Structure formats: structure tokens, C-alpha cells
Length: 419
Image: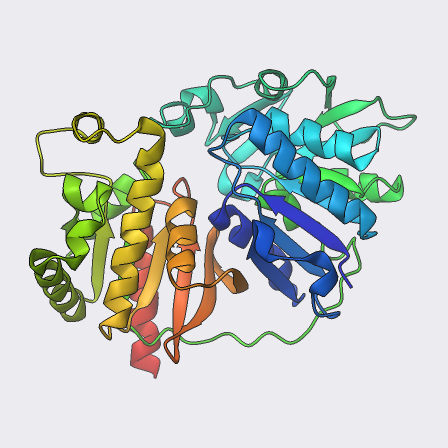
């Protein structure tokens, strides 16, 4: 029986939220939008996480998609609905929260945007990333979806007319109506706020990033099961579709420490026809050989050796700017699919929600069961494809220190030694 529905706006966000429940031994299913029908799920599934893929659509479309999912959940009698948001507050925050509130029929939506263990805190209604107001952080410099405000109420107000109230904790009396934004300067304050909402019987309509998810399993009285953690016997292939500066620094550090780095050209990023040409097949053969010889290899689209920019190339070829992101993620997904079809066996690390979803769609997979969190914000899952089991690691672009990729590679190397 589903006790909790989580609605995420991209696939990596869905997975890193799901693992917070899996860490407690709860049976979790992560699926993409239309692929998950609430009435058809196995009865033992307690947490359903739907990737609504609303991060990059218009606010109006995001409102419609989230509202429809919430209405379906209400009809299905799901007791707790949780709108998962990005920890850097990117995406259609105001549109999605107002859609969830209005479609639920409730008077309040409780929003806890902080993830203190990852350096995301909210103080006096202002959201900080590693001590920096979010609009002045790397999320404010994102070339595709920059965050323009640091006050959470202003971010919501860009897309919503719903009243927003900044709260230091649960109200002792009657809660004001609208979207209630709670401060969380540390994990203790976040946990106490959620416990207070439980005592008020207000754990029915929530919003927040994966930090909120970690506080919910015990309070929602979710059943647990024994967890079996797999080894990581294969070397690492990183497939990166993120342009976040944090991920760029991680790749630069990995390359400095010996990782093989494969950079896609502009044509390889934005076209797919080249894959079926003789030169495309030669490229794939070469990349497969390079990857098989390396303990850590990186296939990435964030940089280019060409003088022409992505935008200039797209303009010259008549590619609409709004298609660029999906073309790049689609190309990365197609390349990875071809490499697996050619027999490549590696532990896969995919960063960027668009890239992860594009890869799974190429493999005709629409569900994922997370296994564990190997680092904060870095999730291990398993997939089955062409009769083989692959370990699949995913992370959002904005998570982790500069040495994260090599830390994961060293973990794999240690697993191999022990095996």
C-alpha cells in the first residue's frame, strides 16, 4: 500500500530522494511520469516516486502536470503527498507548489527547502548554499536555469499568487493558509520541525528537497526489510551531461589524477545521425577501447575543443535553442546505449537528470529501484539490460567535493581488491 507519493521534477532528484527511504529498508519504486499507474503497483510498495520531468517546461505546463498527479493521488487515497524540489531551488518552484496546494484541496502546504547535511540551509526565509545566498552561488550562475532570488518567498512569488509565510517552526495555534516556508539552519531544526508537524497531524502535503525525505520514514511508520548491498566489481565510466561548475571541477580533478576524459564535438553533442556513419562507428570502437583500458573514464559534453560555441552551432544549423539541452542528453544516452550493446561492462555514473532519463529511455526502462547512498547525494541503483546487471550511480550536478569522482573510483578499486 502506498503511504507516500513523491513528485520530483527530474530523474536524479527522484532517485536521490528515493534512497533516503531505501536507506531505512523501505520498498521504494522510482518511475517516470506516465509509466507509473498508482492502482497497478505491487501492494508491498510503500513509497512511490514519480519523475514528472517538469524542471525545464513552462510554468503553465508544470502546473498542469503536477496538479494532475496530485489529483490522481487524492483519488487513490494516498495519505501523504510530497512535492520534491531542487536543493538549489531551480525549476518551476512557485508553479508546482501552488498546483500541489490547489489540487490537494488543503489549506496549507508545508515547505522545508533545506538540506543541511549538503550545506543547503534556510535562515529567516533566505536560502543559502555553503554559506552563500543561493542567487550568489553556483546556482545563480547556471547558464540555463539561474536562480535570481535568495528569499524563498520571492522565488515562489515569481510564479504564484498563493500567500507565502516564513515560519521558524510549526505554529502552536492555527496555521495560516498558503505556502508555509520553514527555516532550517541545521539538521536538528529540520527534524524538530517535521516532528512538530507530525504532532499537529500535518504530514499530508509537504514540499522540500531530499533533506526532508531523510526525516520522514520513522514518522510515517514505514515498514522495513533487509537491505543487501552489492559490490562494485567493474571499473568506472562517468557520463556527464551537467554544466554545473561543481561537476566541471570534479571532472578536471579526475583528469588531473589520471582519468581518461572523452569530450564530444559540437556535432556529436547536437546530432545523432553521425552515430550510424562509418566515422561514428570508428569513434565508438575507439572510445570503447579507451574506456576498457582505464580505471576511470569520463564521457562528457560540458566542454568542447571547437572554437564555435554550442549556441552558434545550433543557430547555424537551425536548431531551436530550447532543443539544445534535450539533444545533448539524448546524444549521451544514445552513445552509452551503443557502448553497452558493444559489450562494454562498467560501473556507470550518470550525472544530470536529463542525461539519466535519456539513457533509461534508450534502454526502454521506466522504473528504477535505488539501493543505497554511497555518498551524500550520490545514489547506487541496479539495472538489467541485454541479460546483464549493471551498477548505476547517479548524482545531481551540484553535489559533491572536487575529488568526488576519484573517491568513487577508489571505492570501486577497493571492492575489486577485496573480491
